[in-house]
Each structure stands twice: as C-alpha cells, then as structure tokens.
Length: 117
Image (cartoon, rainbow, N blue to C red; front, top):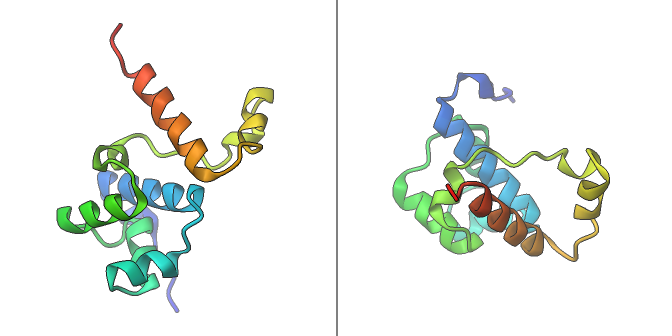
C-alpha cells in the first residue's frame, strides 16, 4: 500500500480535506460511517482528507449536510488538532461534553473573530 503525499495537494484541496477530518473527528463520525452514507469507500474519504482527491461541490454539499456543518466552514483555516494541550483555557476544551459543543464554540469564535467591528 502506498502512502499518500499530502504535500502535492493544492492549497484549498488540502485545507478542505484537513477541515473534513477535523470536523469528522470532533463529531466522532468514523470514516467508514461517513463513507457508507455517501455510498463511497472509506479510502476515498481518506483521500479527500489528505487532499489527494478533490471534493466536487456536490459531494462537499452532501458532506456538509451529513455532518451539519455549513459549507463555508470547510474553507476556513484548518482546526489545530493539538489545540487542547496549549494553554489552561485550551485544556478545558477537551472537557467539553462532546464534539458538537466544541464545533459550535469554534464556529462562534471564528464568526466573532472575523467581524470587522
């Protein structure tokens, strides 16, 4: 089996893939479960996450609907998977009840940070 070289992916392909993986993990959705709902293989999900294969707009819409994530959030700077270990406030992050709560807070913070006010 050949390892996928994520360094060859276009910037947005990689960013969208990284966000797909982060959102999927936050929501505790296994690759296989997402793949089954999409009617594709879990390997294809891996290729999307790695940025090796591009997501079509239709497939991205399907994924956003399944995960309950607005499509535009896949284009934001990728979530940092090491986030909970960095500071005292961030260590509280891992104590939140579930990935959906974390995701909601992330989206709220991102929205506040991107306001020009």
